[in-house]
Image 1: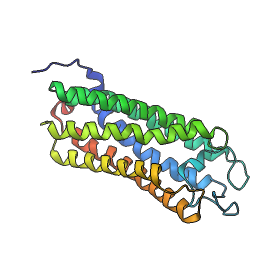
Image 2: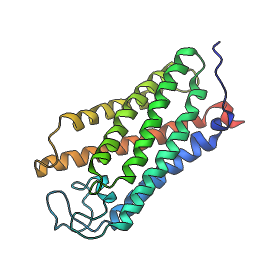
Image 3: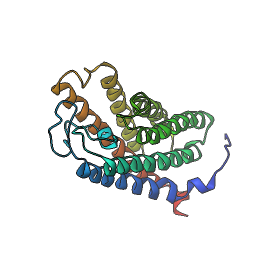
Length: 236
């Protein structure tokens, strides 16, 4: 039997169940608050009032000046804080994962790869919140796009690891597989779909696609915590 190093602290329910659940719920609540405090304006229409769910990206909440020209300080602070919260939480969450699933050498190696990319994705989450697109467009695009590029690899690695593991039910591997397929599709949208600058319909497609993948992301993390909550060592 392959022996891997133990990090008992990160195998506690707080880090694998409680914190991810709280962070996911709080992230959603903060997005709602950020949307409600966004002054208005979209990429193609500066006259709109408030946040449009189908025409404003999440990142619009993080800009210094709203697209209608008004100050956007409150929404910007909420957006930056929410991404820092989930970025730090997910980094801690994935650091503990190799110790959960690494019973053999292959699983441990795959989980380490998945965690490395998850850590990179977590850094990109924080970076996205700290780089308003109207002040630092290029860094913002780099961070926001690489969230999904990094977690694409993470989702693939952990789909394989969870499927091979006997510690957790196979339905959680299926859930993670759906997470991987969803991110893969969204990376395709980022790479090949028409730019949102081209037309209103292209903007709506990109915005709705982003909302969907963020929703899948939150669902996937939240769903996995129920599998971890059933593990014997977390019940002790």
